[in-house]
Amino acid sequence: MRALLASSLALLMFFMASLACTANDTLFIRLTDTPVPTATPTPLPITTKFKVGESGVVVGLSEFAAVSLPASAGPLVPGIGGATCFPNTRVTVLDVSRNINDPNDETIYYLVQCSGRGWIAEYQFSRFNRGDKAIVQTADGSDARLYRQSDVTSAPLDQACPNGTEVSVTGLTANPFNPNDRNIYVQVRCGTVSGWLLEEQLAPLK
Image 1 (cartoon, helix red, strand yellow):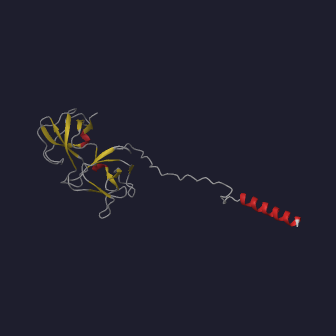
Image 2 (spheres, one colour; image 1 turned 180 degrees about the horizontal axis):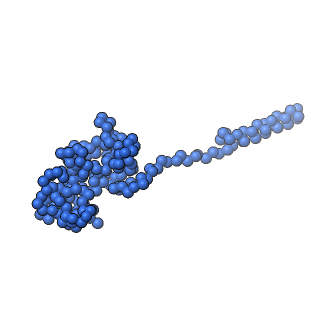
């Protein structure tokens, strides 16, 4: 009887030891959760107009028509929209990317949150909004030509806006006459004159 009891105890101890050495058993070995890696955006090897965390203003063809944003970085595909934004809405950049489907497309796209998340092209995204102050700052230091309409092919005003002048922003739009024009047009009041100039001719007032 004692021999049988001793044999049973030995078998039980062997069984318990086997369980303790089993890697998949959590009764004896306390497993720690393996951290799940989080995806981080891959920085583009170029300087972009906006960085993640900065904000910009949505530019449309009118003040009332919502701008459709694709669900992926690239041009809008008719009928496949990711979100909509109203013009003159200021939103924060969540991510930056080139066209994920066309490596020849040099346009920069920004992920933003509006009615949902969507990507907006750089030529639809401005640094300025109505009511902002800005400084005329042309690339060659020349005076900025003011246009009567938001179109570089329209007749310019007789009076230019001198380089270095502080101006008030009164309007913002894309070219409603030419969908292939990727300029952003900013309406400004320069002294007593009001007209349209290119966004690239303005710098934020520091």
